[in-house]
Length: 332
Image (tube, rainbow, N blue to C red; front, side, top):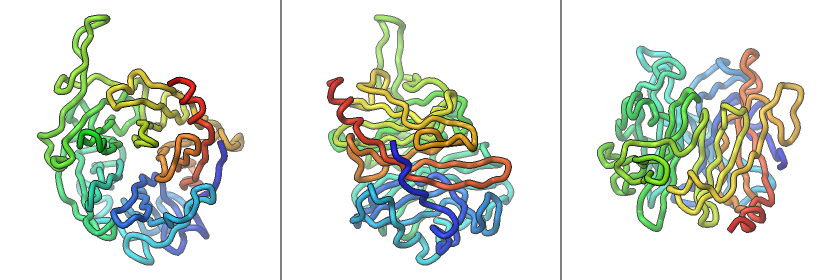
């Protein structure tokens, strides 16, 4: 594990008027660029300092090797990172809208968002779309109420399975106090809330049977935070903030329905106290997202830190994990 680079902060993203930001859900745009979508963003170098917007996006050079760290080329909005759609923060009742994950299908990009009525109180979810490679966005579809599926359909990560034309989603609550469930939807029906179905088990022990359309059964236990599900070299790869154990984990599976019996599970980053950090120990870590271009033997992810209290650092860093493919091949 190598902590490669700090990707946001003073002198790095100042030119986009975003010294303080977090998250960074990534996708490859239809025209081949790398786009990262960030959460609550402030012009000054701490939470609450100056111009506030969320979500915002930055484009990175797709031709630059990941081992050299992402390099920003422009923002959604041009020279300044503008909010993807217009709305007013701390209005009644919306306080902020936060990104879950972003996905490209054909010529359209889809962004799952969470509408907060007070931080951490998700009233509903929406999907926003872009048909110009992320340059402009529309608030396209209202999806689910915050209490849908007992609050297990707020935070989301998703990936398209080219083999069957479905988008597979892992969802959980925003509060980091629940497990995660598996859902799927035909890619052509992604904006239709009625087309989503859940994966669940009936029976117990040897009589237990899993099937689509059953009430959801958690496929990931514990207290789950932000997640990132991606196909890396045809292997389903999930990174997530394991809030209950204060660490970032990764697992690999041959299919989304096999996440309960992964090929390999590893801890990538360990939480720690401030002042005790090294490459593998990160204070107040969260939001691990796998970067496009990653391989099983050379996995790159971004991860956020928020030093609550002083409200700085509040930034995103890039990490490199080498050799996981070797361990995975030994399990197959």
